[in-house]
Amino acid sequence: MRRTGGLPFVPDGDLRVVVGDTPDEISAGVLTAEVVGALLDVPLGLVTGPDVGPGAVRLGLHDDAGPADADPAERYTLTVTADGVDLRAPRPAGLLRGVATLCQLFGRDGDGRVSAPAVVVQDAPRYAWRGLSLDVARHFFTVEEVAAVLGVMAQLKLNVLHLHLTDDQGWRLDVPSRPPLALRSSSTAVGGGAGGCYSADDYARIVAFAAARHITVVPEIDLPGHVNAALHALPELTPDGVAPPTYTGIEVGFSRLHRDVPATRAFLQDVLGDVAAMTPGPYVHIGGDEVLTMAAEEYRWFVRTARDVVRAAGKTPVGWQEIAHADVDPGTVVQYWDPRADPEPFVAAAAAGARLLMSPGSRVYLDMKYDADSELGLAWAGYVELRDSYDWDPDRTVPGLPADAVVGVEAAVWTETLPTAEDLFVMLLPRLAAVAEVAWSAQDRRGWEGFRVRVAGLAPGWDRAGYPFYPSPQVDW
Ligand code: TNX
Image 1 (cartoon, rainbow, N blue to C red):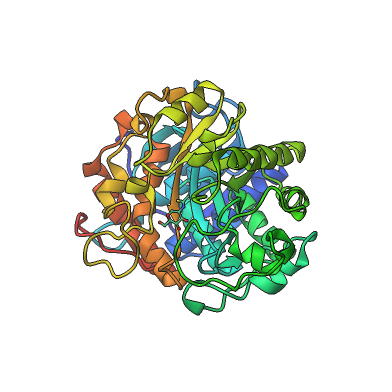
Image 2 (cartoon, rainbow, N blue to C red; image 1 turned 120 degrees about the vertical axis):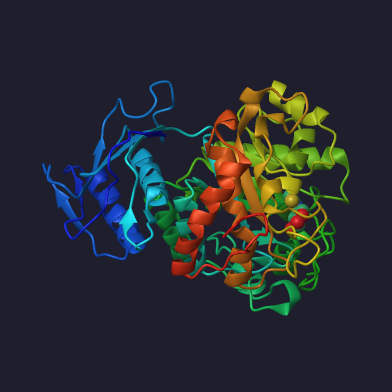
């Protein structure tokens, strides 16, 4: 970002969004009018066609906008002058990322007047995958609550929402091939809560709300462990054909599928096939974590089989780091999470063509307590204060891993201790802003002292939107 030294832009009554007449520009314009209008608390009109008068926030698709050496997918150029705003990007996603930056530039001066400094920003992300994994299985979150999370993600330029849809405590997606999963296993949650489930239509609404913000939804069906809800609904998946009781505790690692049970293969085939068909995005997450009661050879069979089903459905498989112990194929995304593990299998997986997604628990597990006084959260990866989420380099997290194997960064929020949306936001904010900056900004162009100030600037917006956040003592709010 370069300050041009000109006068700031002070929006007045003439503020409006101006776009060309392509459908992509008009959709970007509608969303821009909504978010900028809400931020500044003024109704914003949308105008198409040439309009060069002062007070315009002009958006346009231009191939050469943004840093020339960056991937065109999300790069943009944002110019603010006293007369207004000019935002250009090669693709619609870049326009939305530029709008997020514009919202961060607006501030209030001493007299309460809103203004944005005169700047030129030429910007592009460090990583193509900047995600949040949300556990809707331990506790369920409604479509509206997920939409609120997506709104915050868009503000932070995140672009992947990974939904952990199934676990021991509940099954949260109605899939056409196995109606009993939703019918029998969705009305439970940790601690005996009400649970819930997305219909195909609900899921499509989440995907559409995300897509409008250029956020990809990655659905996870966790297997071959974390499957008590599936076994409860479909007793044919157990060796003795007897359904286990529902589970509302928070232990992990006790439930599993069985290769030798005849119904198992069709279950993998049909359920992963359903989820792939319901998902327009390119990825399906197959879980693979914490299977503590299975021989290595059987585990590898599950990972291979699930991977092949996902590939046959035209999608790229993603799995938790344990899948590095199966023979992962080129392109598979391995999600690193447990820093206690030996790095060697991840280096080997990368050498075999896998890509690594960085979710180290001690940095980006946003269900970890902030400190010893946090009421919510767990602490198996230690306390994670705001600065812990900020001060790290994803390329240097796994010793020996080549930087070009790192596809991106994903925060994760597990919800064993988080029954409400308020709880969820207090754990996400402000740490999600730290993770988002780690994922977006080049390592040598960001720093804690600057971030402390920037993150404080986000708090008024969170207050206005009604999102509770943790007022970390590391920031002057
Ligand atoms: C580990 S991370 C898990 C989850 C828990 C989480 C709690 C991972 C792949 N598995 O099952 O919810 O810790 O922090």
